[in-house]
Length: 104
Image 1 (tube, rainbow, N blue to C red):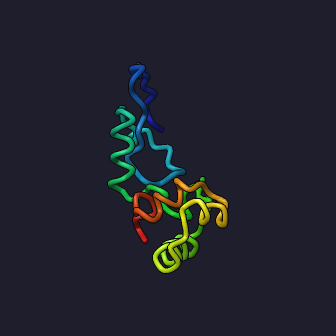
Image 2: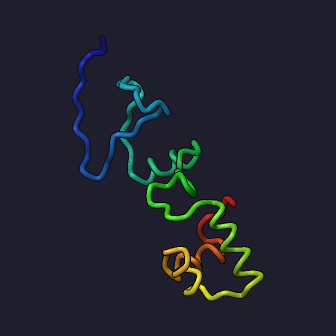
């Protein structure tokens, strides 16, 4: 059993988890930090959802590769591709310019 400790958490801080086991409840794995630190730790640990794993992803990796190939070979507009794949023209633009889906 862990000794019960209470600490004030500053308003601009968060409780961060130092291990990567979602079910862990070990208090020694908790520390106070900023949201920026939390994001940095997540990225360093490779825990960022990318591509199809992202909760709001509307496209698959196969579709993204297909979009890039079709744009390159068929010179289809961003708007037309967007309508075909049911996403915005700006989403197509970010795919073509490799601002998103950079891992493929």
